Structures are given as C-alpha cells and as structure tokens.
Length: 381
Image (cartoon, rainbow, N blue to C red; front, side):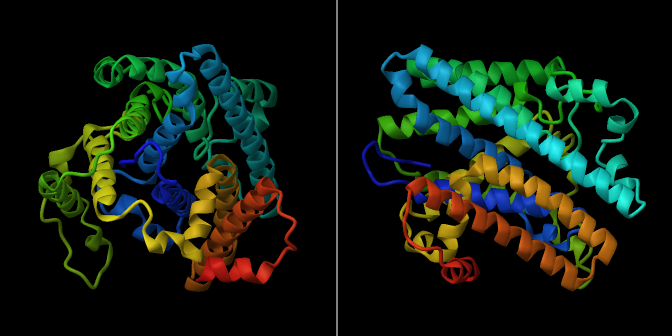
C-alpha cells in the first residue's frame, strides 16, 4: 500500500490486519460454517498471509526511522524485546490452552480435545513436553503462528539493514533464502511434523520482508497503484477464485470446477507456495488501488472496531486463539446448529472487539466513564 512520508495514518493497515484476525478466529473454530466465507475460500492465500504481509509493513513503519539513522544496535534491541514479548504471549497461550482443553476433556469425557490439537504428550511426558514447548520445538495445532513471528522479529533488523543499502538487494537476499529453503527443504525442527515448523520461517520471511520493503519505498517516494497493472492483477485474482471454486460448497449452485486445482499443485502453505505469495501481493495491490487510505467508511464505528483489533494484533490474536478453543468446545457439546454457530462467532468477535477497545482506552489514559452501550453499538453498526 502506498503511503507518503508525512501524511495522515493509513487507515487501511489496521483495518485489514484486524479483519485478518477476525478471519483467523473464524477459521480456527472447527465445524464453523462461517469459515466458508472467509478469504481462504476465494483464492490461494488466506488471512495468515495478509497478517504477515501487514505485520512486515507495520514493522517497517515502526523501526525504519531508527535504522535510517544508523542505530542498528537500537533496532536490534527493540526488535529483540518485541520478539521476547511475542514469545511470552505464545507460552501464555500454550499454558492457558492446555488448562482449558484438558479441563474440557475431563469434564466432558472427550479425549479429542487434547488428541486432535496434539496436546496428549503433556499428560504422558509433562516435563519433557513443557521443556520442548519453551524451546518452540513443541507446537500444538493452531499455536504455530507466534513462534514464526518470534523468528521474523529477529530477522527484521537484518532485513532493514539490507533495505537501507538497497531495496532490490534486500528482496534478492530474501528471495534467495526462500528459494533455497524450498529447494533444499530447509526448516526448523518440530515435534509433530517431520517436515518441520508448519510456518517455515525461512520461507515466510519473504512475505514479511516484502511488507517491510513496501513501507520503506512508500516513505521514500509517494506513489500510486498503476492502472495498467490492475488488469493482469484482476485477471490473476479471478483465476485464483475460479480454481478455488467456492461455489462447490453449496448444493444449490453448480457442482464442479471450471479449472482443476491440480494445475496449481503443490500449493504448500508451510513453505509459502509462489501461488499463495503472488495471490496475497495481488490482493494487496488491488485493495490499495480501489480503497483510498482515508476512505470515509474506514472511519465508521464498525470499521473502527475492526481497526482497533488490528492496533493490538498480538493480544487480540492470542485472545482469538483461546476463544476459538472455547468455540470448538461449545459447538461440540451443544451441536453445530445455526443458533450455536451464530452465538459462537458473534460472542467471540464481540469479545475481541471489546477487549481491543478497552486496551486502546487504557493506552490513551482516558478519564471518560465507561459506556458499554456505545461500544456495543459501535461493534454492531
């Protein structure tokens, strides 16, 4: 997304990052029918790619001025502290999720709550498993994004150093690491996957670096999306939509794919398939072209509620992970009917929004009395 050095905040960044967090929550709730309308059903990439791309863009905005002054030590220390914060939140989510899922498994006599999430080892070898979790070697299902984010924050100072030398150099080095990781199957080891981390940081750093590079270029030169590129980009997005064929999920629409998915296989998410990488870049470029950075609708209460989630992405992502487990338990025990699915999604998203609003309120040091009704109206409007 383009952004000039001295203009007002680009409202799109926080909004689409917050929307990605909402989609991730919905996608992480098993048997959630709402997941049929999230991004992953309409193309090659999903909310994870959007989240990492915008995380790189935001990191570039936040750390670039320090790096530009040549304060690489300060950049490294600040990025390291952020990596430490992410690590602590990850361990906190892991422990809280373990307590929740083991309690549910015992209370409802359903071992699937620990078996399906790959947490059974905590009962059979608790100390070894805990030590492995602290070393990020043990990553239960749905708890593998933050470990990647920890590694990416340690990579950030290197990426910014290269970007200070040359944007093309930084992207070339990043692409080279991605290419070698894919060709040689290089990844960090993990306990549950023979192939390594589900989000291979050697591959996903390319998306993170691309986001950071976009923010640096936007600060240096005021640019706008070129209309000449919109036609091929729109064509690629349409191609991805047809291949994904979301309509085959509905019995009342034509059943069958116009283009077989086999032509884009393999489409590895762990190794950031080129199809997925190009799709999220095309999507970002298209949105930047059609949505102004200060569009009026981005200032509406409902959009502001989503944006507030994006401003507190680490905390809201962690909360969304726990809420997705609560939603899983609720749908399993109460049944996946329309009412429970509606309740799980609405309550979960409302809790995320209210939490983000409270965090923003505290950060601003506001002395305005708490008015729950107005915030509920903002979330619902």
